[in-house]
Every structure is written in structure tokens, then in C-alpha cells.
Amino acid sequence: YNEYKSYLRMLVLLIILGIAASLTPKDQIRIKAELNKAPSSLKEAYQLTVAKSLLNDLDSSVCDFVSKNMDSGLDNAYYASYVAKIAGCTVKVDVDSIRSELKSDNIKNVFKAATTLANFGHDLGENVVPSVVELVKKEDTVMAHSLAYMVASLYPEDVPKVLSDSVEDIAHRADTVGDAMSFEGGLIETAMFLKGALAVSGKVKTPLLSEAMVTKFSNYILRNRYKQGLANVFYTLTALDVLSNNGIVVPTRFEVLENSATFTKNSEFLKIAILNPLGLSVSDSKLTIKSAVSPLTGDNLLAKDTLSSESGVFNVPKTTSKRGIYNVEVEGAVPSGFISPPNAKFPAKVIVDAQISNPSLKLTDTDDNRVLANSDLSKAPLKAKADISTRFTLEFYVSDGTDNIAIHQAFVRFTNKKTNQDVFFIAQADLTKKYTVDLNFRTTAAKSFKSIGGEYLVDLIVGDATIAASQTKNIASLTLDFPDSKEFVPSESRAAKPEITHMFREKEKRPPQVVSLAFTALIFVPALAVVIAWARLGANVSNFKVSIFSIGFHAGLILIMAIYVNFFLGVDMFVTIKCLSIVSIVTFLCGNRLLSSIAAAKKVK
Image (cartoon, rainbow, N blue to C red):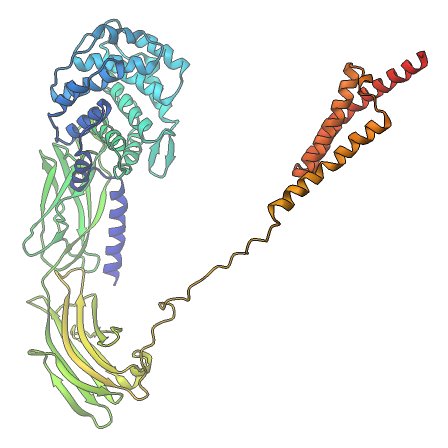
């Protein structure tokens, strides 16, 4: 048990280490399939061409598409320059117009112009990096710095110290989650920063990012390799390319090839490689086998040794063919410019062919110790009847051809032919590695079989992580007769539930449309009554004197009424009081002045 527990622990560790790995052959096949489409724009043609070239899957027909769809403009020239450089196309562009963009106050235009001219092999002219530095000071973003780094790497002059010194500072703006680093802008911003920062590092011939930073950025990029969409694939591959080919600080990792950590009788070597993020092996590297020990027996699977390889792929011979699980730990050494891979721990196992040997099945009547049936199972499965007085005894060995072995799983399965319900019993091994299943139906009828009789198929099943294939052998067909035998009742948890129907409240009856219109008309009756009353009382509207205070007073009254209406419609009390306090003060002051002027006018008369 401890051996399998150790194996599971090592397997989990291997999975965790494999999360941040490199492109596998399966990844490349999946990505190539996603890139297998025709471009619909120059931008797509550019992204497809770059991505396919990194996977050595270039399609030369893209040149025809570019020549037919080429148009003026800096963006189109930028896209076409990459296609022309990679696929060898002939593309005509307005060089003078592109060179004029080098003086733009937009850093993206400067970057695209400089890159386009460089891709077409044209002279970049006067160094514009100092002006780019000034643009970065104004636009202090991760993307602006990334573009500035790439522009600076294109010119033969030295990179300004202010740019090279800012690389690590910009990297510290990234968010760290676990063992991965990325910027707020996601994959695009992170990929562009890596491309620019590592380009400058190559120009100054000094790693401007620490190994820990590069490894964490690499982990983030690799975790995006499963994202779909052309843009995601493009930026993932371009970032992996610059991580793998910068020659300054290249992360590496171990990869067990061809499932060679599982040894069979036909396999003699553990194949392990040191790979860069693109999945290519690192040449002139070294591998040290630190240990390869079985935690159960202490046997060594591999000899402790240091191996060298020009190709970066190592074939390590096994030193034993003894069945078991081994814990392997390896260490690597890589040339200058590469980050040594962290020590890798992973499980390896030696598996053998195994078969069931010397089986015997005996049915005994427990009441009088009479043997009811006895078979060595060499010809056909045993067919018999059994009841609660029957004892079922199965004995067998598992052999690897030379010796009897102990295995992890051995059990007997009873399957009811009518209901397909399974009942399992575990086989127990003794010191001689003989396995036994001993059943007394008197005690198991109710407990295991739930008193459900009928015909059962009996299968013997053995399996283990260190045998080539599990074995299933049909050993008997038993008709079990239990007293008070019950019919099989499906579990309520699996039965269909009653259909749930929802009863929504029925719509209330509404009055006819005529009643609604009549009620609406009655609302205006009070207003009509007021107008009639004013006319009977002799209200003189022409006597209204136009002044700031009279207008303010009457407007205030109207606003107060409007505030009350809004309160009635749903405005809360606090907003209502706040509005009333403002409007009421103005209305009071205007009303006071209006009434004073009216009183003064009456005194004059």
C-alpha cells in the first residue's frame, strides 16, 4: 500500500510540474489544425504566417493573397513586411511615406514604421530612439515601454541607459499569482513586454530580467496555450519564440519522452530531454541521475551517473527488470544563456505480463460438509445452484511466468443477469501469495445480496499498476436461492421524480376600456371647476404684473407641486425634503416681496 501511495504522490507532483512546461507534440498538432485556414485580411495573413513559421508549417500561397489585397497605409505595410520577410514575397511599399512616420508623436506609428523598414531591409536613417524616450515619458504605460524597447533594439546605436534601466522597473508592475507573472493587459501586453525586454537584453548582452521573473512570465504564457482564437495563438507563439531564442535567459525543463518511464520487457531505456518553451531540445546539455529507488524494496532502477548529449535527448538504460514502482530524481546542466531546469522528481515503473494461475472453485454444504461442486476452471465456467447453506470458496495465484506475485487489486464480481446489479468481494492473500475468496451465503445473503436471488454471473478480476493488462475471467454461473427472496427495487434517488408544475397567479380582471377613459376624463373635472369658479368670482388675469418676484413666486408654487408629485411617484423622503427646502426659501422670499409691492400699490391708490 505504501508503494502505491508513494506512486500517487509522485504522480501528482509530476502533474503539478507539468502545468508550466513547454509545447508538446500534441499541442503543436492542435495549434496547426487551428491555423489551417485561409486569411481574410492582411492582419490575419501576418499572424498566420508568423505563427506557422514558428511551427515550421509555412504556406507559400500567402504571397498571392498579400499581392491581391495590398493597400496603402502604415498598418498594411507593417503586416506585409513580416509576410515578405518570412515567405519571401515581393511587396511594393512607399518607403518615404513610411520613413516619415518615424517622426510621429505616436509611439505605435514609430514602432511600426521602424519595424517595417527593418523587415524590408531598408536603412532606418537618423536615430529616433532619443525622441522615443521622450514619448515614453509622456505615455508611461507597459505597452509604450515595450514598443520603445523594440525600436531601440533595431538601431545600431547603444540603447539609452534610461530604457535599459527601466526594464526591471516595468516588470515589477506585473501581477504575481502563484508561480506566474502577467500584466493587467493580459496575454498581448505580457507577450509584447517579453519581446521588447528580451530584445533589449540581447542588444546590451546582459539579462535585464531575473531568472525567476523570466520563469514566471514563461509559466503564464504557457498556461495560455490552450486558448483558442488566432490572436491568442499568435501572441502565445511569438512570446514562446522570444523566450526560447533570446540567447540570454532561456527557461528550460525536463520532459519524459514516449512514455518511456514505463518499462516493459521490450523497452530498456528511459528517454528524457531538456526542452525550451517551444518544445525544442537544448543542445550540449547534461543530465545527472541522482536517484531511482523503489521505496518498497530499495532496488535501483537506473545507475547514478552524469550523461552528456549534443542533441539534448538522453537514453538512460535500466539496471533491473524487477517489477515495481521507482522514484526517480534527475538534475540538469545547460549551456550559458539558459536557465537550468529545476530538479525533477517523477515515478517510473517496470511492468510485467501476468496471468491467473491454479484457480479452483469449490461449493460446500455447510450443514453436512458435503462438497456440492469442485472445478479447476480449466475448461468452462462452473454452473451450479446455491442457497444459504452453501459456502463459496475460490483460490488462485497470480504469476508473472517465473514466480507468484502480489497485486494491488483482486476481487470477485457477482452480476445479477436480470437486474445487472453488481456485488463485489475482495480476495485476500496469505504469506504464500495465494488469494482466497471465502463466502458463506448464510451471512452474505441479506447483507451483500439484499436477499435478491436469481442467476448471477461470477467474474474474477485482477489488476495492478505494474502488470501489463488487467485480467477478467468468467468463473461461474450460479443460481442463488434465498428464502424470502425479494424483487429488486430501484433506488428512489435514481428513479424519475414527479414532474414539477408551476401555477402562476392569474391576471386580474380589468374594467372595459370605456370605463377607463371615462375615469380619466373625470380627473380633469376639478380643474374645470376651478376655472369656472375663477370666472364667476371675476378673477382678473390681466392684472398680473410681470416682475422677477411674481414670476419667481408662481414658478416656486408650480415646482412645489411638481416635487409632491415626484414624491408620490417614488422619490424618497430625504430627496423630497432637500428639494423643498431650496425651492421653499426662494418661493417665500419672492412671495414676500410680491405681497409687499401689492400692499404698497393699494396705499398709493
